[in-house]
Image (tube, rainbow, N blue to C red; front, side):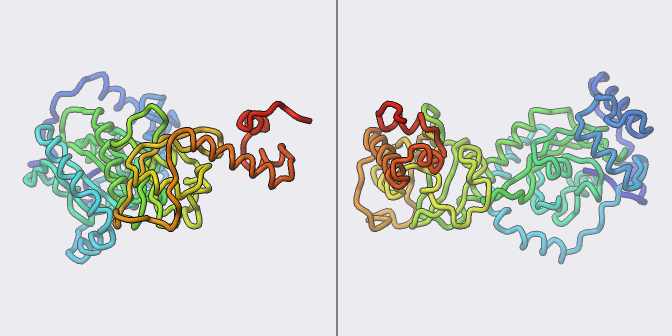
Length: 385
């Protein structure tokens, strides 16, 4: 975050005395800056995170210098309206979480900033001191807080590194922006692409690196809310057996009435790597080694069920029907979803793969993406030549 190239800062705000900070921490940052700005050490002597030093280097390569004033461009009503309209769905998903963050941050002098994927502010919340120009400049809807515009910040870093970050005082590139401390976490949409980021910033506030965890948790909740906006007929909550289901850590997978994948959250993409690519034309049967109709039947029964994967691993799932809850979701016979039938189904699918391969177990195993030993074990037979 930051202040304005070619525009002197207001003496009433920029000359304020910083609150006391641990000398060792700020001293290490100052030493790193000296090394980096003099190009004496490419990665600032290891005194700061490598991604911070790399961001400093990019700023220097663009001809920027730390002592320059940061220029927060004017934001017109038209720009504000355009930023809001273009990111309506993200703002709608994030608004309740931003409100809750505002309450959590009330006594800390930190506030929340939501940006789009380019680092443009689209919403804010929390205890923003509107009498402090340093706070108001960075919380205007439509203002560009990307690295190219305001140098090294948590916003630019999170959008580039695509991971949660913490940035304190002099770790920002410009001297003007060294009054800020901020945590940031990227936001990923239902298709896995980065759609924005969540930032928690304080002005001359005590260092609170634990806010990175808060930003990460809140970002996960925003992603889940954004995913649930997608039209779907069945929602699957997924996790490993033995893990609890029903909280924000669940993998979420949305299916339409034909079993096609319509959306997923980040946790689901970690559990099911196939979701890492485009969702179009990806069917639930590509993910799970069982008839997809069983997932809808499990939702009607309202009981968690184990689902086998083609890899031989298993997940536990809780299926929830969306919309027309009464009546069948698909034209399919009811199937009992206890553990034993699932094993029978898995065995039947493997047996059919062997039959389709005309008894060639090695070929069947390759088609299923499992080992020959797994095929023999699942079929309960000894190894055959």
